[in-house]
Each structure stands twice: as C-alpha cells, then as structure tokens.
Image (cartoon, rainbow, N blue to C red; front, side, top):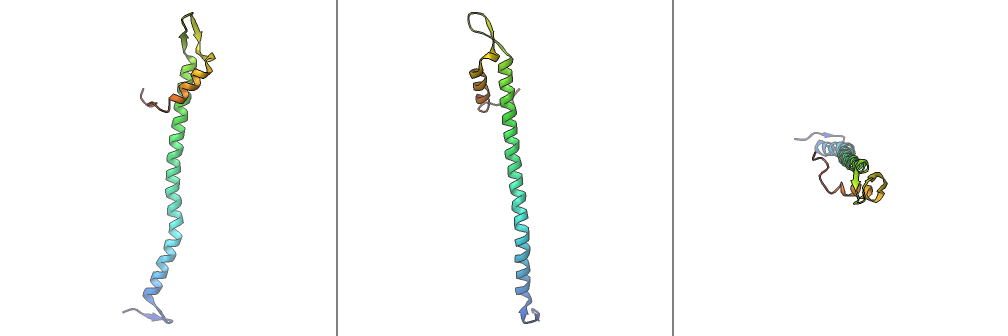
Length: 95
C-alpha cells in the first residue's frame, strides 16, 4: 500500500527520482565511454606515427647500390616518403 503524502502517490515520486538520477548519470557515463574511445584512437595514431617515422629513418639511414656505385639514401626523398607511407600497411610491431 502506497502512502499518499500531499496528494502525490509515493510510487510516482520514486519514478520521478529515478528519472532525475538517470538524467544526472547519463552524461557522465557517455563522457566516460567517449573518453575511452578517444584514448584508443590516440594510442592507435601514436603507434602509427611512431612506426612510420621509424621506417622512414631506417630508410634514410641506409646506403644503397644503384648499379653505378653506392649512394646515400637520404637523398631519395620519394623513397623515404613511400617507406613511411607503406609502413601503415605492414606489421610494424613485428621485429
């Protein structure tokens, strides 16, 4: 049996309290979920940039042979750029 205080049923009052609590908690919960998703995206981006720069530095530090003799690959900007671009498609974390 529900109490009738001030003409308002206590079940209706409890339902209103639940809605207010839900309205307070929902933005906090959504902010937490979005923060977790953004942190994952940040970590993935950091790993990709780190891997690409590592591959580009490795390519630039190498010495190659063009058939006429050895040459420094740091002058091959297109090759360095392609090494960095292709690094996102292959497994960077396999050593």
